[in-house]
Length: 152
View 1 (tube, rainbow, N blue to C red):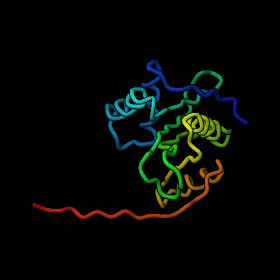
View 2 (view 1 turned 180 degrees about the vertical axis):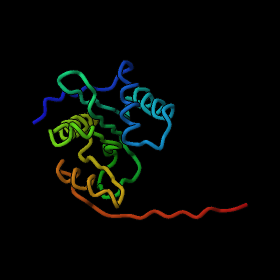
View 3 (view 1 turned 135 degrees about the vertical axis):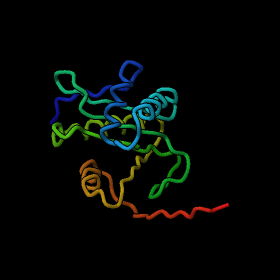
């Protein structure tokens, strides 16, 4: 079990969320992460973010969630809660931090009247697939998206 404390992101911790987001999604610039982190605060009716802190107050993970009203692959209801992002610092993994963050997202989702929580992962991200299974998610389908650029 974990000794992590889970807190909802607020104006005072949005920069911490942005820093952790950069660890999960390093291809986006710092300003983009900060903007997206603030967006969750600005749309609290449909988005939430949670931070995990260890016993000494160091942020060691985050989860972001949203309500999706559009079709979500593998679900039957609308809206559904959607786990948009989940990250636990490598040194804090396998201690229940991810499970505690997912539990916070589950509570938030239930409080909004949803009966389902969905998520996704890249096809080649076996670690994420295993983590989702450990958190109680079931795989529903696999999809490959395509696009065609239209010139002119």
